[in-house]
Length: 277
View 1 (cartoon, helix red, strand yellow):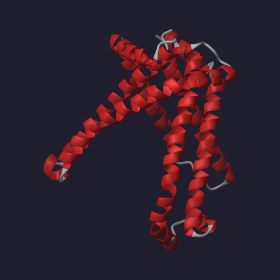
View 2 (cartoon, rainbow, N blue to C red; view 1 turned 120 degrees about the horizontal axis):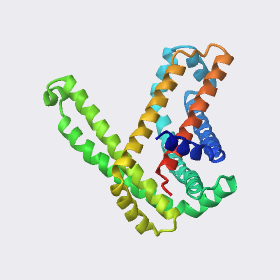
View 3 (cartoon, rainbow, N blue to C red; view 1 turned 30 degrees about the horizontal axis):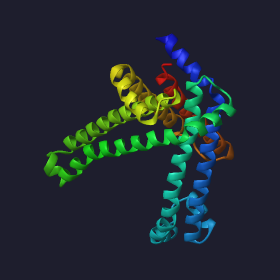
């Protein structure tokens, strides 16, 4: 078991160039989105100093102005937000096409990363699109009946405890089904990387997943738990971290970026674990 874990971790770590590239691309997009949102808030409120005043403490007049301008801000951001989501989805598929292709083909260079990204992008995008449709339909089947029957929560569920347990149960069920869709998506993309056609790859993806369901599903659960553990550790690390000095702010930023890189590495570990070539 430990030898398998070490082998999978090593396989993912060898892709450190691709991992850093994905991290840097995501960081740049994040900075652009943050700056755009700041500018929209700043122009709506009237001065960048207003936002700076909020950072020093609660100011009722500034807060009131923000509430009054909120619909205008949302109207300005909404169009850009939708375009941003679409762009980020396309960029994410492109980047992870390069990473997944490198892992499958035992390649490690940035050149091969971009070669694989261009080679597999369109077909991988189709699989991701189908996965999103399956995901939306699955979550709708779980949650739409719940919200329709919700009504008055205390009358429907008799107690807050029953309501909370029901919500927690539905969340767990949603996560378990999301794991299935993700595993099918990755396995199908690997079939494409092996040269299979788009439709055949998706069919083979389901067949392979069903024939090795327990192994793959335990892998998916471990990855979810790993993400949850990482989030918990991150919360512990920054929970009491103050921002009173520039040194503290710098330390907080460095910790945040370190955890961002680790999350990309975990995604590479997931790809490497599913890779059974």
